[in-house]
Length: 288
Ligand code: GLU
Image (cartoon, rainbow, N blue to C red; front, side):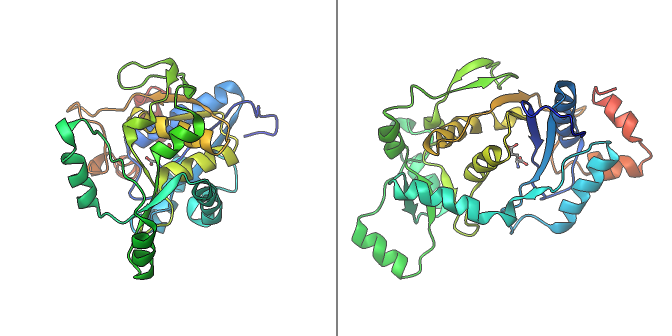
């Protein structure tokens, strides 16, 4: 976008290169891009490729090509999360030094079992605690894999409760949530901040990047509305600014189901190969 852009409005599209973009992604990218254009603001493309086991360079390249075909323009250079692990590591260290994290040695299955065995099924999400120091040290020494989790109990103590945590929803959550929303990080439990095999996890990377890139308005699908609760908490703990949020509806196909990676025929690649023009797709998505 031109040099006369308004830095009071900065938004982003942040796909993960784990597959080809489909109609749903096009809708999301266009929603953010057009919002930036309408506001005279900036539009940023961020590649969320921290999970090297699932992300592939060919999908990264395809994202750029498909978005350019769609007529989008974004600022250079594109930030790729895999190249900024030190930023996320610094944020994790800061939280850990303040006693807000703990090492969790449980496997996914053990975490699922812990949730299921909670009394009366009241525990919606995993809550744990650090191991006794001697046991922890022994397991680290033995080379056992662990993830770093955020301790909600410690975070609650540090902030004197979660009552002061709110965010502004300019779009709509899944239950019509709009306006000033009380953040309820309890919903997500003690989220993983750094995964065993990856080194950082989604919530931490996204919060650090939204701040570093000066994002003022996070525009993304409604399926990520719930993620906002814990992301708001991380912003508070790391003293980062809180953007406004605009969650948009999820595009559904003729069968009423939302588009997903399984809908091969709806990838931008396939649509283009079938002779559809970018203009036709934009119009079909309501961006005539
Ligand atoms: N990388 C995430 C995804 O592809 C989006 C993250 C976000 O917009 O906050 O679902």
